[in-house]
Length: 585
Image (cartoon, rainbow, N blue to C red; front, side, top):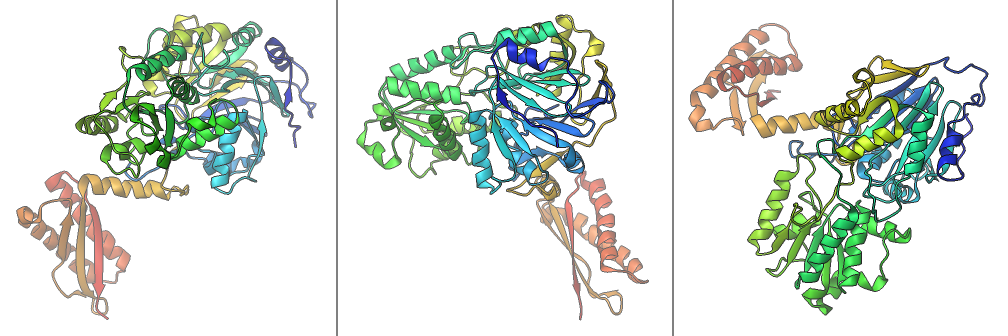
């Protein structure tokens, strides 16, 4: 087993300088650069979410983040999308550690699913991320599945081949870090999710350490691409704080604020505004309750206990002294705000004097869901405020173009690997790298499963590994939900056809003409000729099949093979075909 260490060292340059020393690898007499170092993503490329990046050298794999992606409207009944962990299952003896950049769901949400399939000896995360991970593992009864070790930006982790350090960044959640991985074939730096906020709510980013990394040499930079389409710099959180306070100052009725539960810095600003304007706080939404409880314990959300009240206490206060803080900023059907808008919430009913603030921006694919909720709230007479250039109620936690350029200039990488974004975002980010002097041939715009090989400080593409999406329905991570989803999609788009067959297996004869019943495919009364012709085709095909020896499986396959091309030729649709065989005993 390699030696695993975490120690607090001197901050700023000393930590990065120590991580960069070129000393012999512990526990081995092999010379440097004997083996290749592989870098690949199992999630996070060509998509926003599901972040999971791996660095592999010889018999060691270091994993960076293990996130989920939330299902969009086109995925009926699916709760999460996670990476296919099959490559890690095959190589689980190599896994030495999981490193976490911050505590958002698209970076930690997949950990319970991962630990059900592979053994991860150590998880290194900040105190806040560690607390959120522990809560997830307690819910799944996985508290003993891995040892969680708390780190900060001055910590160091060593294995046989990797020497790892961290640096402080700004994001929409406290304690976000970038990671420095010194390998036998060069230094890899991953930014995690970041932005450059010159007036942050919490601690500032460690510009000094980033600059030191650029001075001492970065072989490969992996950088957040989410806002690569957004020019200039992103708004500071302090600007958003002022806008929120302005709304609190001029609003006389109840205020309902919907935001991401994991946006701890934003939640803190909203809570501070409530305290400043003497409003009691009602919290709705399980994830919001969990994050607030955890963040208050760690001191990231500061508020006297008396300001948080229960539902039955709200009647004691006038509307002008109430704030409802809830989930549902993305229009999720089961979230608190969606239920409030639909009139199905247990405690809250919308009043015409209410002001609803969406302190968020739509995640790609969620705009339609959000619009539906907003329209319902307007119909109920409420005043609804969404983020716009006129009110600055939200700012992204991700770097815009000028900040992405600044990260590239500070770290001065030899090779650049844009991550965390849809393809167009990755492509634009690579073009920004060209603008600041990184050669085109030194940038890698890749897909999940593509492999970068580092050898002697040089980078090239290697052979792909398997990387796919796994759809999670409830707690199922077997991949069976993937097949179930396909069935749901067929049913939602093309409907179902059931065909009833009465037969005597002893004589090998049909006892009656096949009968077809359709649901969601065609209107039976208007498609009489289509259905009758289909029944005749099946009858002819089965009579030929039953003339010889056959099986029930062959009968079902014959029915499907007969009807599928016929229905598609006539309707250009592929309904689900369900044969029902009734056999005479």
